[in-house]
Image 1: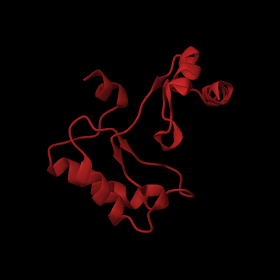
Image 2: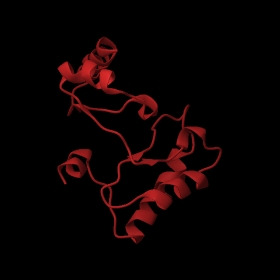
Image 3: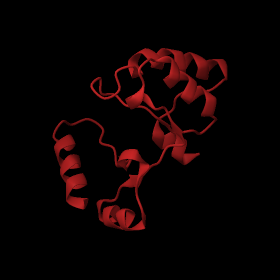
Length: 116
């Protein structure tokens, strides 16, 4: 597992730009042994408190409902960017952003959320 994650970061590094040191386990599934295994990589493991359900959605509306019904200041919302696995996320996002703005909330970089 440690080598798989390290390999992914090495591949991403080749594309330049600002590199993240954040990591989210698929499905938020991890235990202490997994956290210990990744410790040498210097990653910050981040879970989310708002699971959008976008990989399983058959329409954008349930994604919006899932996010806006649970989000609060400081939430980490899990959304996916791959059209093949989460094909309605792009349609849901403008509605989510509008709903956040109506509540006085705004998206923020993960580093800012974690610093708070």
